[in-house]
Image (cartoon, rainbow, N blue to C red; front, side):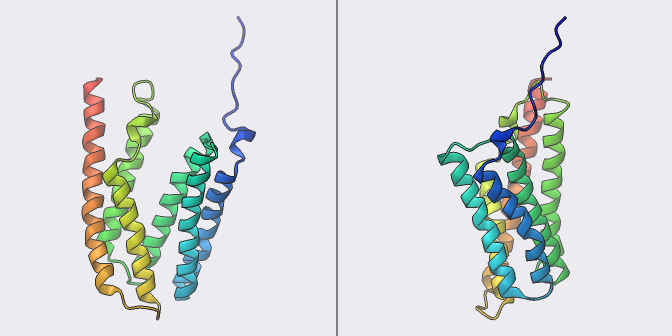
Length: 196
């Protein structure tokens, strides 16, 4: 019997410019957190916008320069969720973001993480990666979360007073996040029960 050759999990093809920008986003997170926690709000805003820009750049490079990779598929959502988690925790600690909103966003992400883990492990033979891709509502929710954070950080600076807009964005973010969470849950339940 010949032993089956195993392909390495990650290779040199994972060393792309797209992944470099994703890694840069992760590296910027602690600097952003420190700046906002220290009430250096203008610097925090610049760092958050820079981190958000790397998300656009790595997506562009991955699609248009054909730099998609397994490592990028893993790192990109981790970078997005880590940035959001840190921003929410710092915002709550400063009293800029209400606890209930942070609980909704973090709770939904936790439920999604459990679902993705189950689909990728216990049910990996029946459900491929397409089963846990974000829905359109989920993408809107992510956009609103980022917009809400930008409005909150800008409001905490001396540049503009945007509290009314920030609070409106918080309500929209909560609604879309809850709807997206319900959508993911119903889709997962339907897929699992239909193939059981």
